[in-house]
Every structure is written in C-alpha cells, then in structure tokens.
Length: 48
Image (cartoon, rainbow, N blue to C red; front, side, top):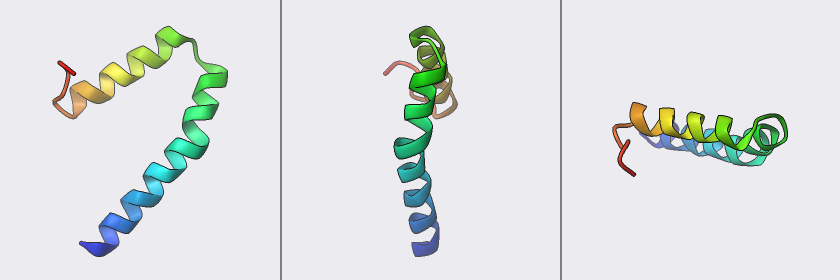
C-alpha cells in the first residue's frame, strides 16, 4: 500500500504543479467547472 500512496502523491503533485496551471491557460472558467463537476460525480461527491 505504501507504494500506491507514493505513486498517488506524485500524481497529485503533477496535477497541481503542471496540469491545473495548463488548464487555467487553455480552458474557460465554464470548462473547468464542468471538469470539476465530472470529477465530483465520478467520485460520488456531486453535492459538494
């Protein structure tokens, strides 16, 4: 499980340091809101 946690931590770090800034440059606020909503729905937290 420790290996999975390390891998997931690297995933989150890359998402925050590379992908979110790229999305902010390339997508509209509405696009980002739709992506965020889709992620929440996939994780079962749509009401948040």
